Length: 457
Image 1: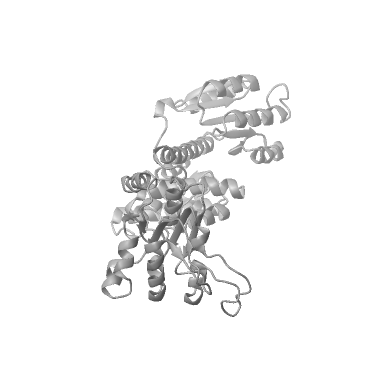
Image 2: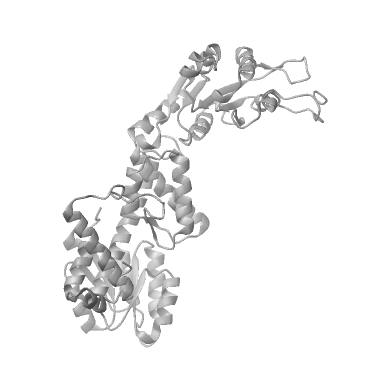
């Protein structure tokens, strides 16, 4: 996933202390370091180069003893390159300025005097954040670009095939039967058929055969006259009439009761409706799209669905694949939902962590797109971090479903856990944690990198 090779990773350091600049150049010798001593120099470099991470000293000239120039530099970097992760350098006496910088969008801060190991770790995490956010943006943009139908996110061959079939069918008036599990987006596809048809200027009228009680379904579909039955206080135009010169979407058609199937078949044969309580038929012009998660073939064999109605509805059938059959779509949809909900609810989440990406690919998604959307929404609202993790999504982490019994893997898990415990008990103080573990500080740092542990454990 790395956007830059080891010897090409750009890093901007903004500080007017030439001695400190030399020290940082040495510490980050594997990076392509861009150095600036003033705000103007820093902004020129930001405009000229792609900079994933910038280290900015708050005390820049002409206000070396204050924070105004450093905060202004931070704000302008964020305006020019919103994706750049800005790490603020501050003294112990100016912690309140650092907190203000965080509020203005700084990724993190560190206090002088510099601890190179900690700073390297902060920079590494910032680079990982930058790359994950870039990957999330790339996935969403690639999905939007590759999808033949606006507003539908898809990259998998299976789903792209569905969308291309819809493109072919939409301009015609053939009846389309959408087959697929609940939550796969059948209504969204029905909307797409309507928008791409010659009826796009007309109404799109959905009705769910499973959501309306059998006693009310006929009235909802075909309407009624005033006084037709107890409680009919006024004339009601049914959903079928309301869809005149547009599209009628019959969702969950497999749940329509047998008595209503007969009346629906009669309407499909002559495009005429009679409101309850009326003997005057009304001619309508509607295009039918229907959907079901039921096995209609089995229902016909069991006598629960009429064969003649099935063949009327099944002029063209399109199977919508479940999300587990298109894991690439799950990832791009998750990225899309995250960006949408983060903006809608003004939350800090900016991307999906590597554990979240792996867990999304591995999960079976029994609730399909609807479940994915709900999990991402909950994670965005509840998480306090910038990256949504597998735990935030309440999904098992990649490879965590069944713990390995391999002795080396078990030893590695135990080592990671004890390091996490030491960091927690010492408040992430590396010197104290190393002493508690009985190892040297460099050894602890190496182990933390090996186990991909940040300062938050």
